[in-house]
Length: 228
Image (cartoon, rainbow, N blue to C red):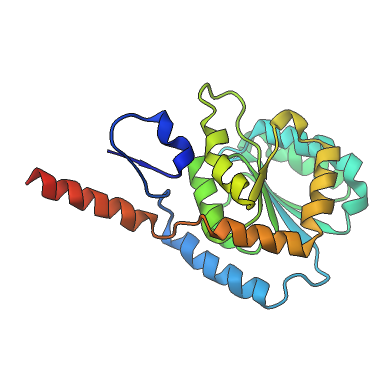
C-alpha cells in the first residue's frame, strides 16, 4: 500500500495506491486557524508585505543565489517588502550581507524551528516543492511560488506542485527564470493585488488535507483487519 499526497504522483508508484494527502503536524493546523483570524482582522492595510524564502531545512543554494542576484533590480520595492529568508548554514552570511548592502528589511536565518506559526503571517512564500512544504502551505492557505529542485531524475517536486498550481493556489517558476523581472511580475500581479492573494489562498485551501493523518490511519486499520 502506498499513500499518495495527490493524484499527480500516483503513477510514480506500483501496487495499491491511495490518495490521502500528506500528513501535517498539529502545529500546522493550529497555525492555519491563526492565519484566518490574522487576515480577517485587516492584514492588508498599509503594512509591508511579508515574503518568505524557504529552501528546506538546509536552505537551497540555487534559490538563495537567484534572490540575492535579483535584489538590486527590485530596489523600488524596498519600502514595501519585509523578507524572511531561511538560507541554511552555508549561505546565511552571504545572503544576510546582500540584503544589508542593498538596504532591504530582512530577517535571515539558517533554520526556523516554528516555521508554520511564522508562515501563518506571511503574504507569499518562495520555496522548493518538497511534499511536506506543499502539504503545509495548502493547509495554511499561503500563496506560493514553487521553484522545484531541477536535478531530480523523476522531477517529483514538479509533480508535487502541479495540483496546487492547477487549482490556482500557487505558481511554478523554473530556477533559471527566478530573476528580477520574474519577481517584479509576481510582485505586481500577485503580492500587491490583495484580491489575487485572497483568491490564491482560497484555492490552496481547497486542496488542504488537515485530516490526512487520519486517512492514513484508517487505511492502516483496514489492512490490519484484512490480515486477521
